[in-house]
Image (cartoon, rainbow, N blue to C red; front, side):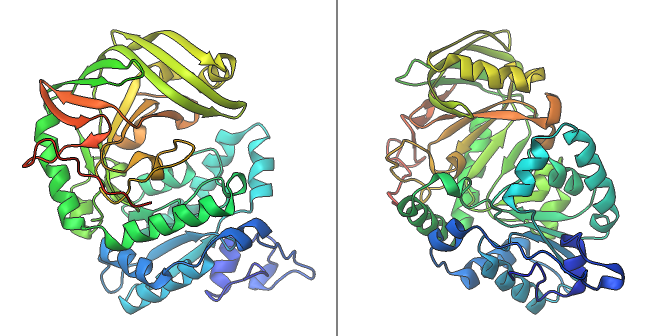
Length: 415
């Protein structure tokens, strides 16, 4: 796959490689981009066939459905091939496979002005193809454009999708960390009891719906917010069948992420009040520590940080819009996706049981009204928070409590 062409044929190459000449024939001297060496050296072997079979179980494709698959030739290309073979066994045809752009092209494009126009051009170009698709598969990539082109393509179609990012920022991680996380994610995808995960999320929804929620932490968080009676909830439980997709209220409901475990909801933004304290927040200019946000009537009225406040404010100002409003809350529910991390990072974006993620800013993808330029939001993680719903404790100090055993955490050390 080093040449840029793939076993998927000329249609794939034409979609992925602009250097192809007329009639699908290669130009005289096409470039041959190599996958970044760090990816080849650092990525450990994984059970690609088992993961591909899980993807098929999640999508439950029908004979004759059409699929679009985005993959990275430098990031587990064998997984893309395994998924394509499993789709073929299920009778999915045709399938269009498209390669993500390499990191250097993504970086140079993002550094230039005109990102919104490039996204619009990309979406309008591929929208007719997505309009005919039933399935969309978004596989791990070494680099992604800092926009929401793929989300908008899915939004404008009727397709149902699956995606997983595996590990972002490979170049900034040690081989040991990549090995550990890869094995963790492999295990979670293959061994999760998806029926039990779905039941747990169903259990939590009525305990949250219509209630006033209080979030507290040892760092100083004391935040209250209301969950509307008609609140939207998204169950990230591993089911993206055709029947499930028919129930979608927004584009988020036609996406299923792996590893699974996130229970998402949009609170009444105007009801948020109190203080949100986050221990560490990464920014392009370094790690910010001890961030405290004070909310009044649903908006951030005060902001400070113990270390790196200027870096935090720079990102804050660059997002703008409704960045001062809570757009979404995520409760992690997967007991396998919990592991100790020397740097304090939560595995896979806080989808492990008991993790809490508060998202500020844009929430259009989840059907909300918050808006920022470029659809940007900011995820803030609370790894050891307590969540109470009108006096009933659902999460205690980062542990999701079991309904029957009350104080027993649904938590397994999967490190």
